[in-house]
Image: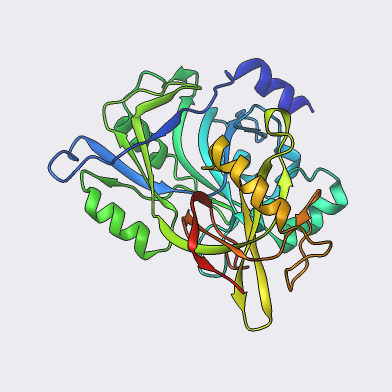
Length: 322
């Protein structure tokens, strides 16, 4: 498209800056920091060409403009001003919280008919939180606090996009607000920091709200490459009145030694059919008797009961399911 070609030719393509997972600055040390919501979605850079067109690139540089047509109005609202904006695409549940399960329905869709249907059934929302380029001027060396004020001055608010508020110098308030609204966590950003494209910088710190849950292993999927023959991910569930209900997959946090140990246990518990009461559509699933209980940490649950960002902690041999 002509508009997209113009963006590619005129606007600089900027990789998103990334945050590190680390302890937040404590009370008394937080005056030099700003705090934002940690959104559970898809990182996206928006390019407004100044001619009403919009181009959206994912974190890995893929063009996702056609996947989210309901965001096209940002280009029109921005008018003749050119900008490169940083944000996160989310799908909000009926309580206004990001739901990653709903977002997955939109990911990768490009067929016009399917996209049109999904736009009506599962609309996305773009949370804008930074501006890296504006009207011919690079803002990469501009301090975060000034960039944030510039972004707010653009007044980019619509039915499917907004510029959420932030808190300056008050980590406790930011943490409590995020927890109270059921968000994933918060991101702390040093007020004087510049924007470092593609780098994971300690000037941005992310911290999520963590819950600990016991889950039941009902299956597994073989890993790839060096994990071939070992569990790459575990299919876990929780007990419900009608049986074991699927709660998601656990991929992160397992050591190679734990994968090897689990492989032996799961091989001895193999069964031909699913132990879950509900339908589980996971390619390559291998089912097991649901006897083993594991402890995982999560950042909450989605509206469909799936675990958010589950991370393996340990097997619970002291707990068994009969």
